[in-house]
Image (cartoon, rainbow, N blue to C red; front, side):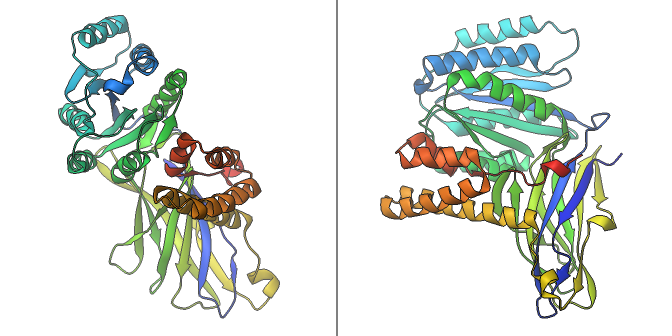
Length: 415
């Protein structure tokens, strides 16, 4: 059984005087009968001074719940950091029949002995997770769940170096802004550099347990973590742009591989039944009566081997010239919908940049534009965030800056 399935959306007709086309490529991860590789998860938690109180108590309760209920087979460790760092649970493979309460007691006893609630040195937590995971060799899906409620108090270069080392180890950092006093740009950079899932805000301590349990369940069902979407194009074709459109709008570019045909873009890890949609804009050197414009495939590593899975001919982009304007001017509704959500992402980013620069007039203009698009697209999550931003909510502004969540336009087609 293949690990991935494909579907493409586009208008198959093109005008004889046109040479570019938009399309959407949808990639779905199948539910594998058997996991092909192990998973290791490092929980990296901020215990700086601002964590005292309800946030700290919820973090402890959530961590203990994870120890008790995390799926068997996962390798798991816990790191806490403030201005120092401590590994409070070493890498442990959770086995059937294991006395999980003994691990909970070990975690509690270690935490009691620590002196915490100092500053916030994020790089220390990441570096300790790297050190812990480096002891596990082989074909392993590597994750770091990074939780912080504050702003980094160390030099930016230290954090940048740690995140780069995490990327080199293929550890995917999934970051959470806890409470309200965190910096969205830092969390977004962690995800972008390490190909982690886009960061999220958890403003309420009582929501942490459900959020982390859902995240770990996804991680435990990883189909492939070192994934790339690969696109074949005919000689002379150029990919003008390629952006992830779902589950979050992430503007990116496909890198040419130098053979005149192949373009590649990295993809964050995919778990069973996950799907990701990508919007692609292709420019063709020439269009004959009929041309294959694009063939998608996914490349990943399984069992130490590089695997390429290709979409069949039904999922290629095949264009046919026509003078019939009714045909070549038709717009595929999935493509149109995602291009609209791309405009939402653009307007939201412009709003965020204006707010950061203190230009409230420009920010409000872009917020109004983004709000109209979100409402027209039926994106309730972004509508609520943009409405709250207009009322002066700092948390809403930060949530908007984490990236634009999108509404899936291909869910009904997924297996």
